Length: 335
Ligand code: ACO
Image (cartoon, rainbow, N blue to C red):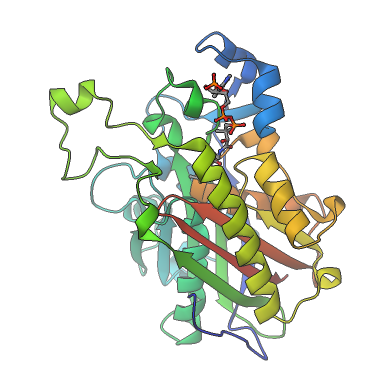
């Protein structure tokens, strides 16, 4: 959390497996040119995005999360029956309740787990990481399955060019267990500022604006965003968070092997890297391929970075995210 000082001699938990669940259907900038008044050139130059993946009809957040979870458990050589807690970070749950996590629990057969969702928009995975690390530190859980998954396409207004070009669907998962050596979560930093709740939001789908025909006509079931304001705050907060976690974990820029920022916009990513003086070759970028997948963005990036050989045993990564709320945060991990 913001004010606590989780400086540790030895990490409490470590990531022992990762996996993703990505839909097959690709939506390109050229497809979007046919839907709204936009261009491949505008989208690429303002955001860095070229393609994004979109869930098929009948494919939900829990389905993508289930695939990610199974892949992460397989990678970790852990049986679903050994999972104590499933945490699912999402702003696009399958239904109002129960939690998306319980559908994953059923699908993977994690019969001994407690399962619940958390909601911190694009920072959800980092909030979940803080919680998972704390549960393991407190010896309340031995094995935690943490998933970030979204079907943002379901809350996207494909007639609004300000938002529809930005988002994509997907899920990523990690398995965490108690650290046995000095490899693991070195620290997590999480913050929020509820005074800015109006700048990035989805008014409908809750109890305040029930799904009446009037609210439906007002498109309250779609995400809305003040793009320029969000951009400004994202740059400041992600820079602050990355600096804060590096200071807490006593990490110099040279000691960071990979900066993994939330993949929202290439310009936000570059500004964050510049602020913490991490050179471009040490910055992980896949926003061009996936767009902004909200809570799924960081776990997808971790999995890809591992598979590309950019996160080896001993590599130090700094993760940093920002999202609706506003929420933001960072984490330092020695893999
Ligand atoms: N295609 C063409 N033109 C567009 C499009 C589009 N898709 N979208 C907006 N425009 C237009 C605007 O209407 C505006 O036109 P006007 O000048 O005639 O009014 C013009 O382009 C410039 O608009 P800006 O908003 O100033 O463009 P900007 O350079 O700020 O880029 C963007 C917009 C990409 C949305 C940027 O503000 C941004 O990335 N914001 C942060 C978005 C984000 O990351 N959100 C999520 C973060 S948190 C989370 O992940 C949930």
